[in-house]
Length: 306
Image 1 (cartoon, one colour):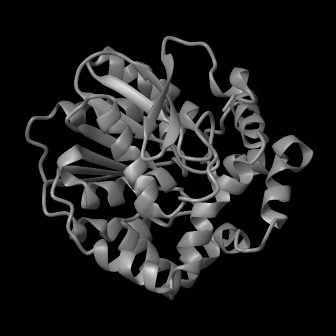
Image 2 (tube, rainbow, N blue to C red):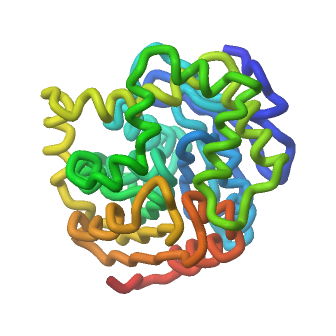
């Protein structure tokens, strides 16, 4: 498959762009540095480029930093199916294996955080450490969406995604203007610059990207009462047994602090909760220096405390 928008998905920088085969598909990655692998997984409505600051910071700190595009997004394959969290998590662990690494420190934001929790539970031998940003554990997420009216209201966009075709058209209308509004609305007072927002808008307008970006959220809601969703929820009872860093912005309007804060009950290992005061849903972009310092210091800590 030819990349339909290489200037957006593969911008020049200190990193190297590659395509990696894993789990029956082809995934685009950007990598920088040498050392222990740190795998960075983006959320909605973004792609690998959201980690541009962390790629540099991690490489400077002595790590091999790799940011991947999820299935259906950025420069990765847009397959007709495979957007349930179990399969998307296997995409991530498959890329780790295809990179020739025994394991990785896994960092995920938003949907990428949901998948990072999943990967750590499903393939614990491939996840050395876990960092989750702006996302509760899958079982906490499910409970909050079903029982917490404020969380249900905060994530109203997910319910809107359940309609056929309309959300895709809304995301791509007016050159992706809705993407820009979502990113600005979900950020704290440190708003992203116009160039960054425009980059995400252009990436969403690559053919089929909007549909593939929405499909995981359709599965999450439609499976709540289905056997496959109930089975997945049971699988997530399996505790995470690797050191975990859980990062959250105090002003996040999409994922309430209360929803995320209890996720430590699913971690049977050192667990560190860090609330960034004055930041919203994208702390790694709103305060890249502070976020990167927190991440690097924790990754280098030989004995992260509980």
